[in-house]
Amino acid sequence: MDLKQYLNDQLAQVEAAMTRLFPAAAGLQPDLARHLEAMGYSLFAGGKRVRPILCLAACAAVGGDRRAALPAAVALECIHTYSLIHDDLPAMDNDELRRGRPTNHMVYGEANAILAGDGLLTWAFELLSRPAEPPIAPEIQLRVIQVVAVGAGPLGMVGGQIIDIASEGKSIDFATLREIHRRKTGALILAAVQAGALVGGAAPDQYAALSRYGEMIGLSFQIVDDLLNVEGSSAELGKAVGSDAERGKATYPAFFGVEATRAKAAEAVSEAVTALADFGPEAEPLRQLALYIKHRKK
Amino acid sequence: MDLKQYLNDQLAQVEAAMTRLFPAAAGLQPDLARHLEAMGYSLFAGGKRVRPILCLAACAAVGGDRRAALPAAVALECIHTYSLIHDDLPAMDNDELRRGRPTNHMVYGEANAILAGDGLLTWAFELLSRPAEPPIAPEIQLRVIQVVAVGAGPLGMVGGQIIDIASEGKSIDFATLREIHRRKTGALILAAVQAGALVGGAAPDQYAALSRYGEMIGLSFQIVDDLLNVEGSSAELGKAVGSDAERGKATYPAFFGVEATRAKAAEAVSEAVTALADFGPEAEPLRQLALYIKHRKK
Image 1 (cartoon, chains in turn green, brown):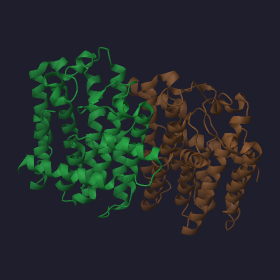
Image 2 (image 1 turned 180 degrees about the horizontal axis):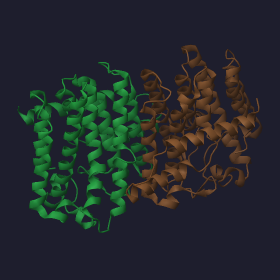
Image 3 (image 1 turned 120 degrees about the vertical axis):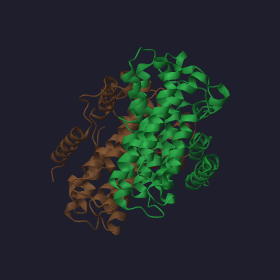
Image 4 (image 1 turned 90 degrees about the horizontal axis):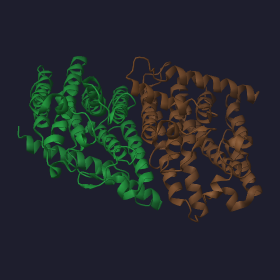
């Protein structure tokens, strides 16, 4: 398969679904219209749409109808986006740039940015709970909501951010770094794969294999992020290079050096691909996505 | 019925369910344990638990098993609590006291308070999506999640807060004040009644009647809030009296004066009770709750 073409095609489908599903501002009270604009400012700011694409690919890997996974895919991107808006706030990372553009609170002010995040998170669950077309069995749809809520929640993504900010400027051990990675980034990536698998009708053994894949892909994603922060150019990342090190944040390269960190990323990707051993050609996009995550430049 | 005894009994049941369902901190990484503590600090800070009690009472009014509505009741209180934590933040109302205690960010810091809110909101949807005991039909459970997400979301509670902060210090018309009330407070109260009605197995006409009740009760709740802010004592409210007026916030008494505002509260309560005309004694708690909301002191 041509990965580049696949990614372009998937990206277009995800963006189209986002645009189609996003609430219309027409006729709304002006402050509400601006609230939707603030939510959309960050949601439609580009990005690789890794979580939605993983969700759709996991659905396809078990022979499901990818269209049924589109609302979940969009919901996952909303949740990812809300987490970026809140992470960028002055009280958290105090970032002024995100993907090369001013952060949400720089444009709309701090109060509106907090509420844009709250709005995106809540709207994600509205999307996840709506009658799906094509339909999803209600008990499956409930399980999708549950894996997303667990992945995004106090012991998932939010918990990872909690440990991350508590660790800032402190010397942390590797176990703590893994906890941060596993929860802050890994948990929602895992949820994306699990949500797609559920919508696609995964059998229990398929679900277990895809969950293993999701864990390993989440791990490699974060290791590569750490590497890019050390090696990348500001233009590629859309934020200042070396900013993690400046803030005294622990990273994989700080523990193991760049070479050993690369080997660890490769190992995680290899384990992700191995988890798919019993899958046929339907899982080829997932295999390619694992390699793509290792080689991505931003 | 003895309303005071009823309220005490309901409060005890809600608090017991909250304690039972809340995630255990034992064995967790210390920062995560403190995150749960921060969530619990605000969730277990007292309060009248109006939304949970309305949810349980609406379930009972249609002959449902109230135990099935307990997770939804707790989820509604989590969402209400997260909204208070975020509203109190320095970037929003910048309040230092809530229910007579330091606000979440005064105790845990701003970043942790934002995340405590995020954690409560997300956990609420985890609770709502879990297999219920006694069981709820999955398609009903999905509708419960949807009404809660709509009530709490960008065009519901979050949208109300958006208009509220955008209106601060401005001269607004009465239509805008109603929009703020309807969304900021009314939408989640309506969702509480609707969620209970759905869990209880409401027929479509019952659901419509209870929705009307929920709208009117939400309206009266906010009108009384405005009155208390003008008339109440600081000890009763747990916050500074007259703070709305100081901030230049529009209120019902500012538009109509105290006497006419009292009449409007009475009218809304009367319409709420009228909406229950076709219900039998099972709806007596809902009728009494309407009167209680009108006469409450804080």
